[in-house]
Image (cartoon, rainbow, N blue to C red; front, side, top):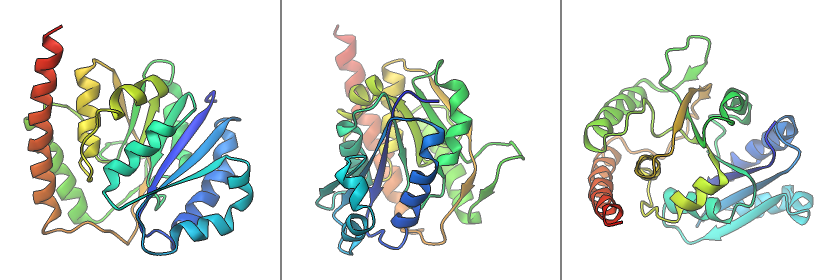
Length: 246
């Protein structure tokens, strides 16, 4: 069991998927902790995402076990950052709104919570007992991207972008107050700061069933991500210089 847990879920125009995801989390969360909160961060949705949540889960909102944060549209990275920084429990998990990695995967993290302060899910594991349903081109993109990240940022993980990561509360405040990436590359900046502060990270294989709906552009997003990696590297060099002053 986990002493207490905050779950941060960023959403952007997710009215068709977030309700089933929240139902699944509420159904299973008691198996992992008796003390929890769920924080949905709306990144400026223009559909009825928040209205649907407020209608379907009015009782949970009234009890403050479900909280909704509304932002103007600025990107997933900033949405996650805001949710993480307002969390109030001992451990903080962020997961995707489409439930590609369900809350069930916490079972795979539990053996490591006494040894590590950050535990991240991986879709690149060689464990054949795990389920991974993903489109072939996304697998190829992920493999190439992680290879580039290892060379440029020098963080050695098989899957930096998996949307299922668990943090001890002290790490949340230390790392996320410094995050500047607003887009999908924020995970890399998070792991870069973990390395900068010598925080041990455990990578654990999880079950993954990718949604058929994706906002990823095969043409534009690889270039955006590559540019973000170089931006993160430049900021990291500056951070290293600042730390070396002391």
